[in-house]
Image (cartoon, rainbow, N blue to C red):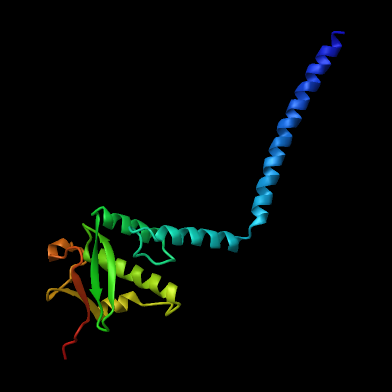
Length: 175
């Protein structure tokens, strides 16, 4: 009789182990079924719909539908006064709203212009490559008649504040 209770305990323990293992298998199978249920393209569609709803928020309404995390972070920083918008005006009349941190340098502004143009090209499917070394040799930025020459100079030192306009001009060569 002593053997019977031990046998029952062992069998009960084995049953419990099997039950836990079955539960784990069931959870794994459910996860696999969930993964198989939606293809990647449908998951992306669901994500983009959710993102589009989020971008309708008054804080984020200025952002494009295909927004990046960097753009969301910039917009939030702008709302909290940690960043500013510099309006860069091109010769063709296009105005690029560039967001940079309050303590940004001229180089930071140039990098932000580059990022803005790259995102714009991706969204529009335009030119794939721009030679930025050529761009900065050929063009320069001007604020209130002052050429922004020193890449390490702070925008604040040039007097640039939130919503100020900086002009993107072609450099005139001396003959």
